[in-house]
View 1 (tube, rainbow, N blue to C red):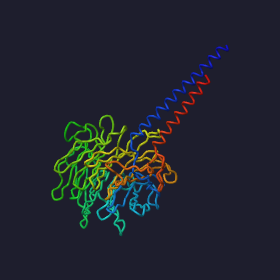
View 2: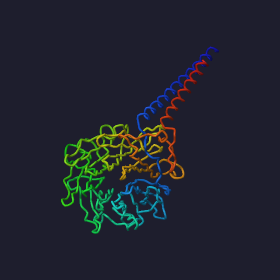
View 3: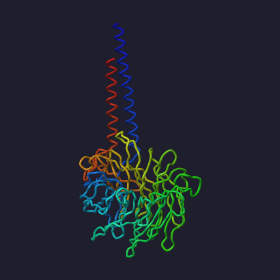
View 4: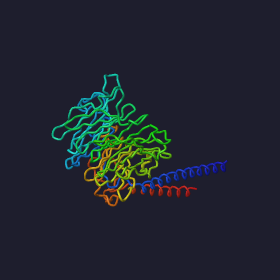
Length: 487
């Protein structure tokens, strides 16, 4: 009997030892994989500390739209559930700006005349600094759900104009997803999806609104998600997703493109996503100072959603499609593209990712294309966030500074209130050398909570991970030695 008890005790010790070895091996594997991930990805080097824009909001803030003025002022509009100044019982369009050398202004309610569900703002800044905002909202009696497009502008030194209805010719079809841009002469251009088509209208200073036009005239199926930009000559460029089987065998949505040349009219529709075989959607279009058209979109490319990119060079034509999210392992969505004054192409997007805190969430990623150099390394921008970061909106200032806003579910106590807020970050391109950021020893970003004025900590994410691996290894070795000694 004593022998049986002894054998039972030995067996129990062996089982505990084997369980410990398995658990230790599992922890070491996780730590090793995390270390490899950290060492092979750039975590927002050169970027400022994350700032919370929606500091006056007490409810959910989402879907930001960012623009930069000719003086470098950053303007952000977003939709918000907060009942700010008794503005409404549902959503409203909020606005805030950052003035260099002064800071953030107080939040303002833009949709003051709106009473029902203002959403999806689109913001742009004119050459004179006027801020233009378009959005969608219900424009019918209570009980109806008819959406229309509305518009308002802020004139420096004067203030906000009265809200205007942009889609008065709409006859019952819902009007969604406005995309707004301002031409070099101050003309305001707005495109939106209405029913199964892409519509367009412009406001000419001193003249007024033109009649609504149908852009997707060659389409025979659903046209949606327009993205509009204006080049230095005043030519209007529009990209959108379309289910029409326009060319080739593909039956899932393509990215279509068209432009309006003043004095000539609209060109014929072109298919941009010619190399794609699956669903293409969410285009983001911008035009460089040389007239080059740049388009990014999300595409089911192979086994997962990727961010793709293509450009049209005047006098040459379309380039071959490129995959931007080459270092990504999970689904990539919602690209936002902007072009700097030097022709550098900047793209941000959201991506599901297994983060260094071992919690799966959504992060904001970024990459740029430098003419004559090529693509930079992919960077994670939402480094201080530990929850879902979504819907990036990117803009570039006249000095080349990159600005990004997004909405974020990270709870940071007094500001976040357990809901979603608007976050912001910028990159000073003067700190960039040969396509890579200079990395001062005392300004490396870490996985810390966002603050409005916190200094960058000295301990980097890489150091924390390596230290964790060492600690786990030491604990494992000591525990193993103690177990062996007891045997």
